[in-house]
Length: 253
Image (cartoon, rainbow, N blue to C red; front, side):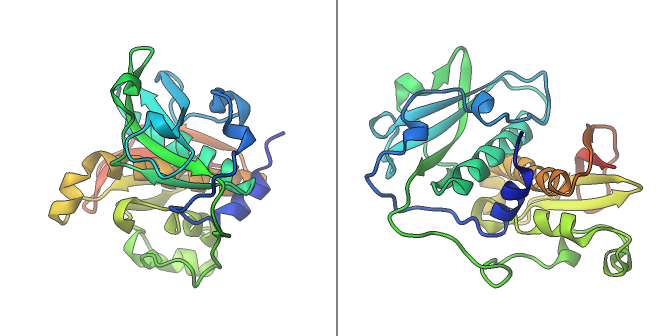
């Protein structure tokens, strides 16, 4: 059975790793289908995805012994789906003592840019960190305040009407350049996710990664909810709000 409690704890001490040891990580030694190994659930079932473990010499300028490449067909919300899948893998690996780092600009060498007709969307470096890489909560996380990512009545969170722990799991999710492009709104038992308009040139330059970031944030809320024994399902029927464009919702019961 999947250990959501351990994964939820990892949300609060995970840290991106950029300096790796040369010790081989046995869990990554073989080119295995990590989705099956870790029982990873996609955000959207009908998008074809392939996850492949690449060796150091198969990726340009790779600092780690391994690199996880995410390949996908391009359908609506395919980038959010990659983020949702990839963050589950990241938390699984970090909970086992490995280090990881989402690497939007690092791409496989030419012969590995596609797999079974799918193109590589993003990679994640992986391996044992050279030194212990964790952080303490909350001081170790430099993130926006809840009021800056939540659309709705803040008094509902403060009174406990809205479980603050679910919002907090989203708030501390990693994102490209730490820009946290998500907005959350809770309507009844549904947490709707929106992507806010880009506010800077760099946000326009990393538009694909911003959508992957939303999937990462959705994975955090899902894992936190399941760790607390709650049921989770997805919905894709919603409307835009002034703060951002609607992408998807998570129904928690």
